Length: 200
Image (tube, rainbow, N blue to C red; front, side, top):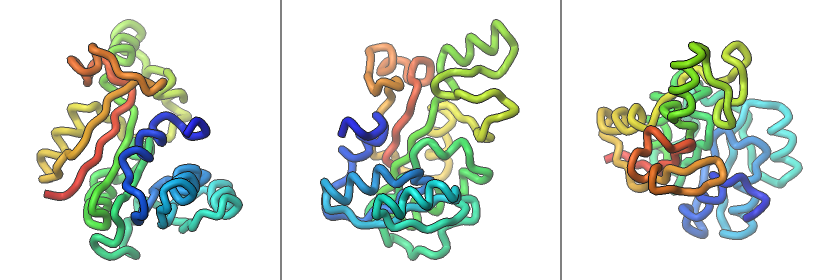
């Protein structure tokens, strides 16, 4: 799985063979293409970007061009085994609605996002008084697609309030490595959060 991003590699490990997957904000379709070839998975990608749609077609990935903020009304309840959204949560206008739709449409949902509670981000804000720029958040505040940044604690509180069950959690750095510090204080030292969730 060396050709896939580190978080996508973990997602592949979490997805059972011969299942149906909906990949939201699927980019060039790399995840679905790998799952189709190696796990016998079927499904669809959803993306709004024209270049990504073309790339999915070239990669032989079923693609629907749509805005995630518009909802998933075209899909019935429980119509997919997994709904995946990797590092797109923070770019949505209505992330709460999208998560609700994910847990409606999918028996399991997988969400990954950069942790804004990371100590480097806090330190940057405290010392410089400006929005941080890092591997997790590479763009300047005026040029970023991120409009709803959250921390690990924010996301887990959200799940608790919305009666969403957290089945799995993995907190890692961008090399996809774990450490004792991340396990002990995930909200402070985790760079990337991966969750498998489902409606209770």
